[in-house]
Image (tube, rainbow, N blue to C red):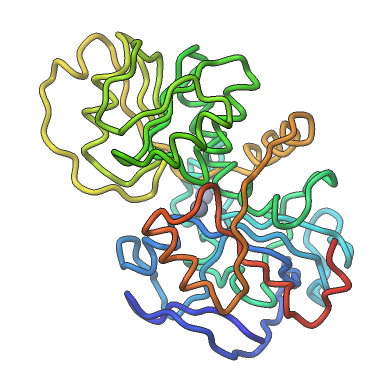
Length: 341
Ligand SMILES: [Zn+2]
Ligand SMILES: [Zn+2]
């Protein structure tokens, strides 16, 4: 099958590898679409380590179950062939560690992640654990769904952890923020969007999606914020966001990697301001989020690329060349386009 592989930092390309075979509890999924995430860029650049390269990246998979392992599942129903499923970043957890046993499987000591520890979705087929597949609402097409599987899900978790403050700042207005802005707007909150300085195109895009204000990342917003989420991987945004939130305000860092955080005066944290990160997701986040997405339509803006153009999509993401999300349309040029929605 055709797949995109990262062999070493900076080395990415299209390869022809054997189709994977499912083992116990796994199913094989024909990939229809897979969203591009900033984490894929961190993996390519070696900022997030790939334990056993080469690996097929991609952890926002929308696909169709083709077949299950020949082994009977240990528990629950097998996933029927033909079912459309989503495969997110969380690919496997131990179920036994202190985190798994306390509803925090996102922090599992032994967790395995799709597209880092397990081959991911920039390929014609993926073998995934059926227990970590997410049922998807019928009201969305494949390409529109893909960015919801990480940008949407992590954004949703970050939004919940930011609390229910009325005035919310979003730093870095990319794939995740363009979804979170819509969720926050639907909840009746005021959204303040921070982009790269001078990026008037992204600022206009943010206003189109309901942001009350949009400006450069180091600007002070016109009012004090109640909370802020930082999506951009730039450590200097932490003191900027802390300076923008009110006493008791919450700043959530939603990325897996960030450049070094400059030292800052304790005054910025004083006043019971809270600074925290968000790591990964739980399956319960996923079920809650997709139930919400079924009730509240989310409009994802998608830039479409074919599988062999994945490296180009990553460079376009690096340089901020599109609004919204990049999605690899794996089914385009694939063996069975008639199976697509
Ligand atoms: Zn665990
Ligand atoms: Zn991601």
